[in-house]
Length: 121
Image: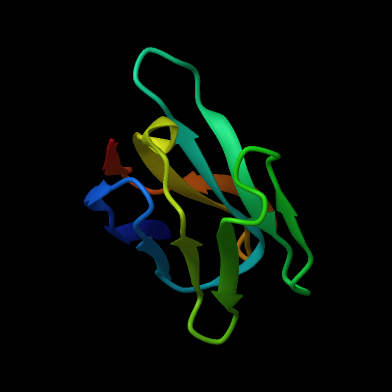
């Protein structure tokens, strides 16, 4: 069974930093694009950043220059380094991965369990 497990998150003051990590477990699959999304209180889930297998990154305008997404293909992990955090960054953060399962050549979109990030003013 393929799954994503997140770690990191927590409470930080405005201007501080946090690092989120996400690891894929299981066997018999390959990971394509990975990403991070967030869901602020009372709002819909939104894109934060994505990274392709080749390392091409894409960021939402709201985090560009403050957040950095990275991945380790060999370890099947991704991370989100968040600097200069603002209260409006408060949200539940989810990692995602586009996965190809070799058995049956099935494509799946996987999500982590979510981790809370709270930025106090």
